[in-house]
Amino acid sequence: MHKYNPLELPEIIANIIRNLSLHDINLLCWINYTWYKEIQQELRKRCKKQMIEYYKIWEKAEKEYEELHKHQPDCITACDLINVGNVLNRKMRLIAKEQILIEGYMLKNGMVFGQEKEIVKYNIKTFLKNRIPWQCENWIDKYKFKYGNSEEADGWDFSISIHQRKCYDIFHGGSDIF
Image 1 (cartoon, helix red, strand yellow):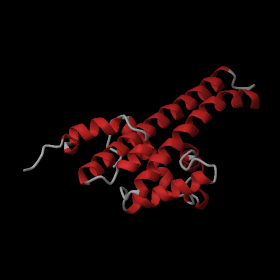
Image 2 (image 1 turned 90 degrees about the vertical axis):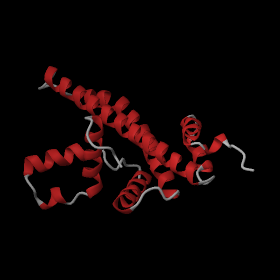
Image 3 (image 1 turned 30 degrees about the vertical axis):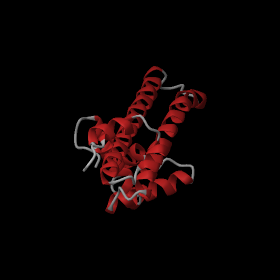
Image 4 (image 1 turned 180 degrees about the horizontal axis):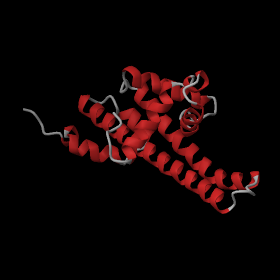
């Protein structure tokens, strides 16, 4: 006789996983296929949330820089720029760290494939060099706009523009990240 096990229902698994840390999720990933799929879905949600948070802080930083330039166009000092950027850069770095940690767990457990897998590997490798892989995306676009499609502008890695498009699409209600 088969006994009813509520821990095999996707709805219950999703509720349990929602409240667990990344480390705990990683440990529970291989209980069975249902747990694997629910954990994969939860990690993708968390990754999407981190991308949205990063994008919001990025927009806030750009608005603050624009306000600073609007109010003091001729007398912006390095100290002003540092004051505006310090707090937001710390937040952006923490969010990027969390996102790359989530991506690392997804990579470790075989939840990313193809180009997405290569992007995650690149993000991890770049972050280990103490850089945020997608932090320069707006500067690259501004550089291409200002100087055209020169060799220097085209020499950037493809993952930066992909990440920027994903963030933009998610934030503005477009396509999903995966």
